[in-house]
Picture 1 (tube, rainbow, N blue to C red):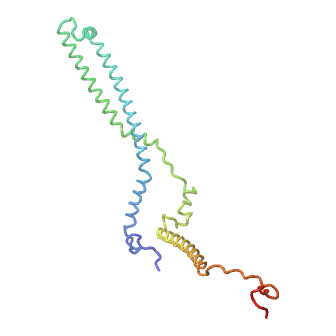
Picture 2: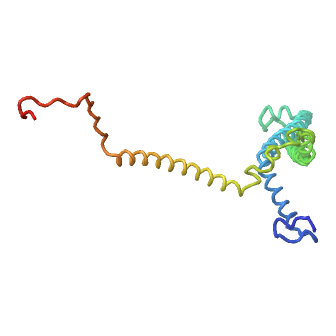
Length: 227
């Protein structure tokens, strides 16, 4: 006799093996992961994204701060720049110097903008590295195989006959309990009705028997002649 069980899904023979159980197991695993991990994964994801974004912004700010300082230093080194700024772009100098200075300022601004774009691109492209780092800080703890909660989970301690494993007994136990309650209620009502019926069938209580005196009762005086 082959004691190997048939497929639990299609009831096919154990050999050759079918893919029903493995496919259903994959579905059950995904559903269990969703129930157990979705909220935790969302919390971890939000935490990682928030810290990664803040790190990228901080790095970008440091790069642009250095670049802006260099830009300001370059402008200050240009001839006639201080008087140009003092007169808000209309200094009392030769128009040729003003045109040359404006061209240099425009080129410096364009270079600053190209540098800022490059800094931002370099910062954003570091997201994979930064995300990996912050995800690596998350600690996932798997219990020991010798842990009592692993060796004897609640359903094992109950002999695999709890609600999670023996669905067929749930309805039966419930029906048995309802039947016992109904029978107990009916029995109590029957006892009450029998007691009431017994009292009604017996009728009124009997009158007590008068006491009998020794020698009988004496004759009433005067009404009857003596014998």
